[in-house]
Image (tube, rainbow, N blue to C red; front, side, top):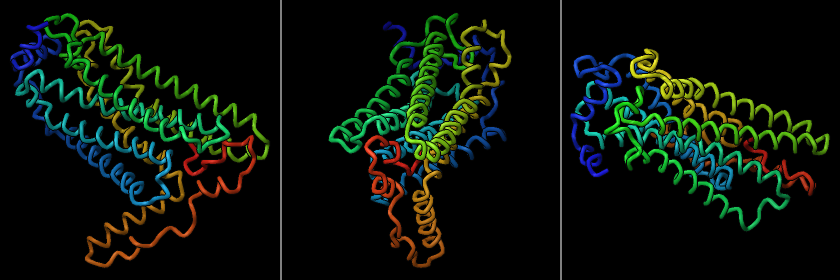
Length: 350
């Protein structure tokens, strides 16, 4: 084990692994500034700006300091970091890869894995919160803050652990025959583990939302007629976006664990599939925030402030509070049915 860690600072190991798994040398690698790389960097900038807008909206408006919006803010923060990590990954790829030491390579790839895992786990945390919210009549209990802290904390601890396993020793240095083609210093067993974890998360989200749907269907007919439509629409968008964005990357990674070295040429195009998976970080803010009318209003206020500051004009709209209460509050005030806690948080319709 000591010899493995000693090789962490040997840049020749990068060349050895890339030549073994991909048959590539430094002269064969693209410079990392091709049109596809530029397009990916632009996408990452969009992801960062989009999720920064969400974070500013949640921070500026006290109406959004409830647990559900804090979970959305956590999702936006993880997606923002995912955009930054993926951008750094692209900028340090190509010919720049051979200038890295193994420990730098592990940090480059591990950061991307950790932030993308945090984004996916945030989706699971939101599903858990929604499930608890509709199954507990007393929604505003004293344990809510504790539950929120535990869920968010677990999300980041697990994400850092997933991204950090290779640098802690679960890699293929010293065992070239076990190396991944897509990620030449990663063990195929680690890749299979990550795919299994992500698949389990997806199945968990499906189960949770399926149970939510059953609860809504079994509720009062008048309640179910309005809430079911919003719930089904949100669930369809969430699961559809998750599956569409991540399924190609999952398939590539599964293929990577089963293919012999240099036997599957499609694995050399894996960057395209990971880029498409990163698109999920840009879609998440649309799904979880634009379905809230009050959040859309806050978006406009933030954009108005930016626009006013950019034009040198007094941005009076920055100081104008929202006239109407959040639909979250309206839903709580209007519904007094003890058997229908579903409607107590209607703003996000998640």
